[in-house]
Every structure is written in C-alpha cells, then in structure tokens.
Length: 323
Image 1 (cartoon, rainbow, N blue to C red):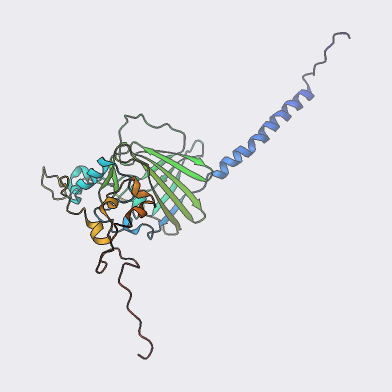
Image 2: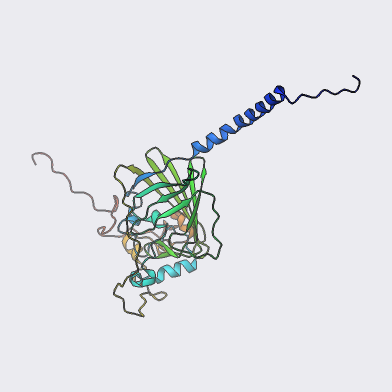
C-alpha cells in the first residue's frame, strides 16, 4: 500500500459534489437576478403634466427677451437676439420646435408604453408618444450601440436607456438644431440630452439636462412632474409637415444686431435689468439676485401680464353684511 493515493471514484459521491457546487452557484446568482427585476419600474400609462409649474414657459410663452437662467454664451445670445417670430414661416424652420426638449418646456401630457421583444420577452424599448410639437421618443433598452458620429441627425435623435436603481436614465444624441425657449434661444445639432424618469406611486418626475458645446457654457437643467391619469393621452398626432405660411420667397424675417425692438420688455414689465434678462450661466444661481438688488426698480402702474401677488393690484374689499 506504500505510495497509494486515494482518489474519489467517479460515482455517486462525485456527482453529489458537482450538484452541490452547481446549486450553490445558482443560489448565489438569485439575488442579482431578483434585484434586476425589482429595479425595473413600470412607467407605462398616461401622465398629466402639472401645468402650474413654469406656466410662463409652457402655456402662453415667455416674454420675448426672457433668456434668464439659460447659460448662453455670446454666440447663443446673439442668435437669440436675432430671432424674429416670423422666421417660423420659413419652410426649413416650421418644425424647429419638434425635438425631445419640447417634452421639457411644453404643456404636454405624455403617454408611455413598453415595446417588448417577442423572442426574449424582455422590454426592448420604452416609447413616449408624440404630440403636435414633439415626435415620439423611443428609448432603446436592448444594448444597441450609438450610431457613428457622422450618422444623420433628425428631430427625435437616437436614445438609449439604462436602469440605475429605480430610475430610468435616457441619453439622446444625433439631434437636429432646435429651440431651447420659445422666446428665441436655440440649441445646435451637437446637443445631447440626458433624461431621468423617477416614479413615486402615481407621480412621475422627469429631470432633463441638456448640453450644447456650441451655444451653452454649462448644462441646462429642467424638470417636470406628472400625475397618473385615467384618461388616455392621445398619441395619433400628425407629424410636423412643412407648409406655406405666407412669407414671400427669398424673405428671411430677422433682426440685425442691436436692432431687436423687444430687448427691453423684461425691464419695462418687471424691472428686470438687461444683464439678467439676456441670460448667461451666472443667471442660473440664486447668488445672482444679490448682484441685482441695487439695480432692480419695481415698475409703477398696473400689472398687465403674468400678474402675481405682490405685483398685481389688491383685490376689492368685501362689504360688511348690512352695509
């Protein structure tokens, strides 16, 4: 027996050992698989926008020279001041507002649904239905790569998504030039957009961060909150179609540098100094208010637009009973 080394026979003991190891590995993997399932929140349904948030932005639209809070660089500011609303009549500009950023600044309720891969039965994409002012947005979740840098750009861009905990984070590239604010600030075709969707029971929070190396010096952030709606949001809107708006051929409505007649509206209506109304990264931060205190002058007279308490005339006094 000298020099004999015992080796397990390839019988039941070895089989039991292999099965035990496989079971242990499978059990260890279960929490990861379960966690993946838990973190994917169901975002489907109709969601009504709370329009009391940013009503000046969403409904009637901002004052013509209101670029406050937009981190415009000099080129972005010059382009914004060149803007004439009549330029929308040009065929190449009619659909300019139709980018996913319209979700952030528009008054739109949204409808979201999953697109399921029939082979894997997994969610291949989340789709946000379009409206008259923004195209449908497809957020691809199947790991497909971004298109090449020189691939064509369009109104809806190309969007991929990932889950981070219970948050869906979407990243959009390959966009055409669009509108940052309806008063005339623009984004370039180098813009990227990061959108984060967070659901809290019957509330959906959407946070948007737009970056543009051409016209902005810093990221521009915006957020919306939605409440779940029992009324289905319509998604059968026609796409934006180029049409004739009555502008003569060869005419391009615009303002020459320094000739925009609406550049003083914020100061006349609200007393906001021009250095604030014309935007820039500094105007995004609350510390900027301290810089303006000495220059702010409350306009006299009756408020005429977007009136709020403190600026509007006092309400009429109620008469006492019997008087």
